[in-house]
Length: 242
Ligand SMILES: [Zn+2]
Image 1 (cartoon, rainbow, N blue to C red):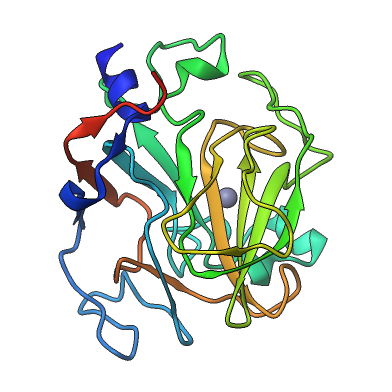
Image 2 (tube, rainbow, N blue to C red):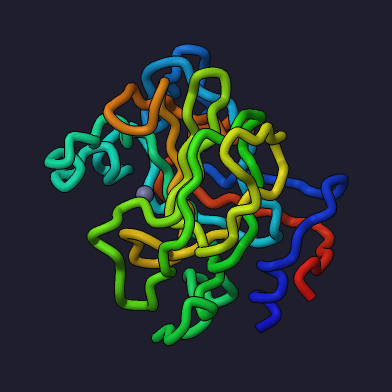
């Protein structure tokens, strides 16, 4: 359980070192292209801070500009709902435990068996809290709430761009609608509410409003993250949760 404790610990800001292991090793240029097009995106990106500080290895399961990288980009379920285009640059973030997967046991019986469950989310932007929804149950392993896609969620407006985070842990949201918040401020914890198969953070950005609007690509600490990227946060650990 050592890795689980480490995963819940929060790094001291001064010693936080975030490094991204990129499969293709290419940085985007100003036009949003790179040499192999794997990190292509369209439109002006939103610069955000990676929303986690707890030491560990994070994994991008969905992200990118093509359906082969990102199921949000084109998905029939979302097409039928008419919201697929606003989700195109959504990113799903998981945490990998000591076993190299997102859980501590092969057959999780509780949500605490997942490395990512309950990990603190820090605001990726300076902004104002636009919407908060809480009170939805975190669904047990093997179940999800197909009637309620978003689950508990939080939307932060940053200069006309809405940054939306879904599937949050019930009762964990620490901010209120209308509240000014700073980048790096703790705001909620990762949960499994809504239509979520395993605990993870879904984050997306859109212009003006959450759905039916133009998607905005996000650069996390300057990187356009795509499926398969791993983000390692290596630091001295300070256990804030006991
Ligand atoms: Zn998602």
